[in-house]
Image (tube, rainbow, N blue to C red; front, side):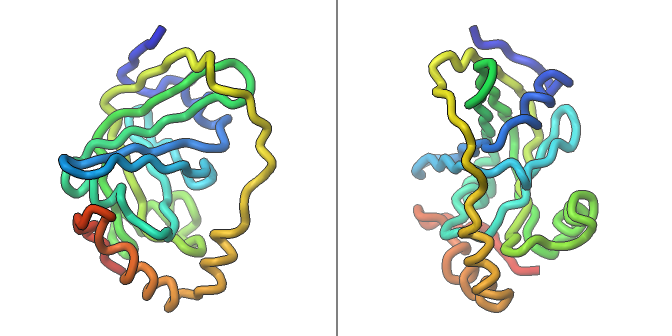
Length: 184
């Protein structure tokens, strides 16, 4: 039942746009596999073979560390409402850290140059394969809304507190790999 495509077409773009959550998966040789849920409010389609999301400050930065070593990244979307479908975007990822030219250009293009509270980096994915599968067993869920916890936490920390937190928590992965994180 799986189908493969060379790019995101209009039908699949509409499916992506209708979702409230997606998941990222990354790993490097000898490390734990990292799978993270992410809200789609900071996800952006850049073209038929490119997407990106603004990554907010969190307790780890596994994806950045894995991409630095290996580059492979998969993003997955599931239909929790409507017709069943699972969509995976496979490819090579890279990270643009705060203050870098790519980071600033992304903010300018998608956020009128204003950095959302808690923003840490942008994760880009150059897609080499789009794959769908049935999703027949994915349960139906009704979203109850967004959690305000991370935004409140970031606002309470303030910019200096977030910088200190990122220096403490975001320089290496749980497996000890450097993330390459720099404050711009």
